[in-house]
Image 1: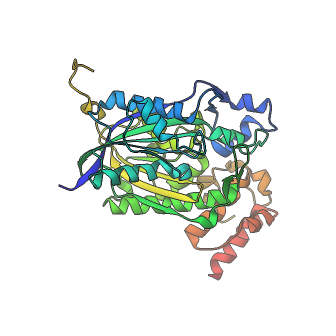
Image 2: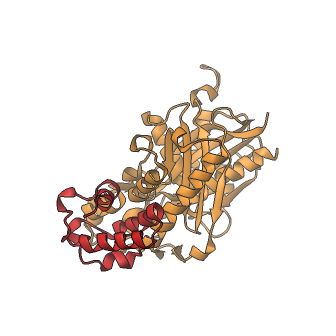
Image 3: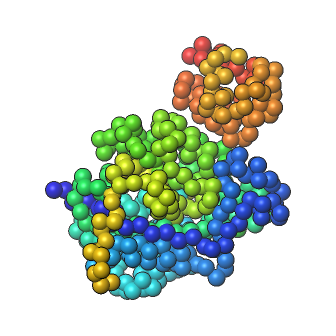
Length: 326
Length: 76
């Protein structure tokens, strides 16, 4: 049987502090209607100064480890655009706080596509035999990127983290990651950029155009590589950038509304955290069930994009026997 | 207004049908900046015609925009 990386557990973490559209209209020249009609966002979680990217990553990862109960974790990949420092990377500190000092741990930056790049990297470590179990985390504090007075970008972003535990398994079993499609285009590097926190620039119209084209194309390629028709897709899990973008992509792909998952209304754009946060949320509220043929797709700064398929696994079966010692 | 254009406005762009008359301005019809881009991408994907964001924004009314699209489609 072909070796594959298989999803064994999921975890998520959101800061406690919630900023509603009403909170923003009190200090910015905008309205709840403007924000909702253009983005679909009604509120977002924002980390205070006391909560770092490492804190959020650690909480999401700890939840995945608690539910997956792996015997060993062999590597940790952290996708983030907002590391806590320029140097060193955030991942080793997260690994140490999880009791995993000594394992390979590194950051990976690919904008809002970071989580899919990290999944591909984790799957590669497993396929090469370098690791049998990899913790893949997406954690971002994107609310720190816009200028605090920029009414067009402040409402878009929230903070959070999500994690998937990948284990060694076989292709074709539930939870096995299908062929990954990834891409980048540096000619669009200036369309989404921030020279430092508080200086985000985004060219909305061009970003929209690239996002829908790239996510639709990558989704088609990933489905075809897995041998799926788009009509086979039970759940589309697009990076939660903006409801208008994700709806447009779904329409381009012919995937009806009841097969699209979304949570942008509650969390905004959480960057590399967006896909695992949505998977965790949808699993918890029953929108995502074992056996669902699931298509993940993302687009972000870089420009970067990607897509991959998996059949969502029954994660309760990866737990140890009831009553077993922790 | 042609049926194809009316369907794009209501089904794809989700604009309120009550305001979609030939002499309505784009603003009055409910176009926002993203709707302009959405329409441009849709027309390229669906009909293979190149109508830029500026072309759309320059149209004074929905009727003018409809005519522009029909002309481009026939001219292919």
